[in-house]
Image 1 (cartoon, one colour):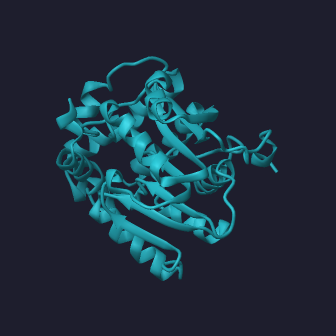
Image 2: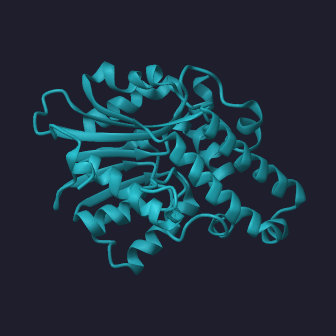
Length: 290
C-alpha cells in the first residue's frame, strides 16, 4: 500500500493526470485554471465568480493578514497562491510535483508582478521546511494515501508557529470505502477519498485542534456541471488532441462525478485547524460572510 504513494509513485500518478497538457485543461476550466470545487454564493453564479468566491472563502477561514507567510501543499496551476498574495498581502511558498503546472504558475506570477511574493517549488509536500503562519492544502489530500496522513500532519505541525492555523480541502466520503475502481484505473491513479474519521489521523497525533468542518458537496456537483458543459462544447478539440476513446472516457468521469456528488456518494470537506494553544482564533463564523 505504501508503495502506491512513495515519492516516485506520487510523481508518476500526478504526471498521468495533471501533465496531460495545459492546453487540454484550458478547454474546460475557468480562466484562472482552478481544478477544485468552487463556492457558489448563489446557484446562478458563474464558474468564474464561484472560483474566486472559493479562494476568498479559504482565505477568510485562514484569517490571513498582510505580511504573513503561507505554505501551500499542492498548488495546482497556482491560482490560490496568486489570489492570497494579491488580495491578502501574504507571502506564499507553494509546492507541487507537476512540472507542467509549476511552469505555468511561475509564468503567471511573473507576468502579474507577484513573483517577489510567491515561490513555486517543484517538490513533494514531504519536503516542506521552514516556519509559516498558515498551512493550506486544496485538492491534494486525495493523492496522499491514508498511510501517509500522520506524516502529512507532522509536516503541517512543524511548518506552523505557535499561533499557526491551517485548512485542508478534500473530496471525502461518509464512511471509509475505496474509490470507484474505473476512476482510479483510468483517471486518478492512486487516489482515495477519505472519511472524516480517517482525516483525523492528520490532526490527532500532533495535537492539532479542529476548529471548523464544512461540507460543500452540492457546490462540487455544480462545479462539475459547469466543467462538463465546457468539456462537451470543446469535444472536437479534445478528439483532435487525443482520440474518441479519451473523449468518451473523460466525459464519463465528469458526468459520473456530477452524479456522485449529487447523490451523496462523495462529499467535499473543508477542515480548519490550529495549533492546540492558539487562542487567537475567531469566536464565531461572522468573518466568513462580511
